[in-house]
Amino acid sequence: MFDYLVIGKGMIGSAAARYLSTSGESVALVGPDEPTDWATHQGVFSSHYDQGRITRILDGNLVWGTLAKRSIAQYRDLETRSGIDFYEPVGVVQVGPHGSLAATTAVGNTLQADFASHSSEQFRAIHPAFHFPADCDCLLEGGVAGYVNPRLLVAAQVAVAQQQGATVIRETVTAVSAHPTHLDIHTDGGQRLQAKKVLVAAGAYSSGVLPQPLPLIRKPRTILLAEVSGAELERLRHIPAVIYYPGLPNSELVDTYMLPPIAYENGRFYLKIGGDMRDLVPADSDNTLRDWFNRGGSQREADALRQVMEAILPGLKADSYHHKPCVVSYREPKYPIIDTILPGQLVVATAGCGAAAKSSDEIGRLGAELLQTGVWQDSLDGSLFQVG
Image 1 (cartoon, rainbow, N blue to C red):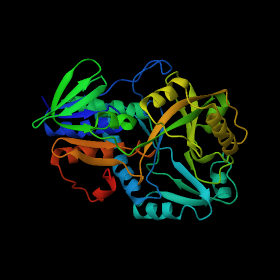
Image 2: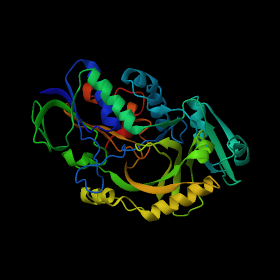
Image 3: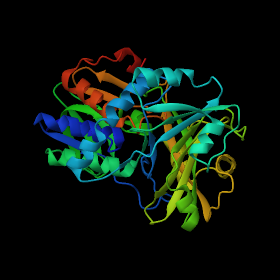
Image 4: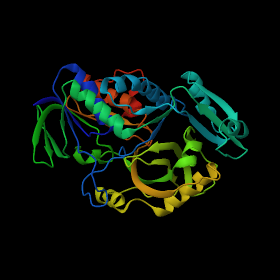
């Protein structure tokens, strides 16, 4: 029997396992590896199957900014301890119509982020590859802002958890049943595991192993990758990441984000852009979600994203474009769920709301702490993270 068992080997779950394994008690981390063929895979998927996620302190919400700042402070130590480099502080620019970034500026000042405000013309003088409308403000964050490689971030968390004695079980949990002294955890590999306490961090699939479903809104999304090489790669290699708020050149999108050229598994370099479609329909079942991943996402969404990318980077010379599916779990209010489900036994940490990759270390730590102690001990308001 394990003292602690974490369900979900993604960014939050792997972080929680690392923190739990510092206790000297027995810890298991249960979750499948990335599928080799997305088109035929019949199991679960994860949004961390990717090479780049933006990380930054600047945020219009102080809670999210705090979660990010705490997490970013752990990156370098985690890289050193794991021997895995996953973090590139290349900078991030946030762009929006005049006056729309006032709350973000206030949070940046409160958290002492390293940033400066520019007009779109001033920003283009710094980074001439970009073009934004004249009526936009640009907040350029340097210092710790940039991107993380989520695949490698998970690998680093898992590596350190294992160094500290955690057991990794690369299977999918299919059911959890609670008993007075422990919980039984069943996997698709036929195992029946037992643990005194369980943390569920299974992202969009968390409800499937809980006594009652969570109020999650599971949003299928598409990302677009633009391959660049040669002179175009060199021209764009050192641009910052971008978050672009309302005022987009495509009315189908609410907002977008873009990352600089990043090396992918095939050795090629891709710009990545993603966003939020106005008419997006949430997934109503695991089957709907699986079908989304099997089909590869939406061509219409990819076309809208391409229009924005080519407007942001005039004269872009991409060798090719292709798109991939993703999923983001939301809930109202737009904070992660970090809450007790069964007192003394079962805690959940999920609902990243499209903003948790950069903050996953701290979200995992808070979930681990709640599982260990049974009470909310942090200075952040714990009621914000409760199920409802």
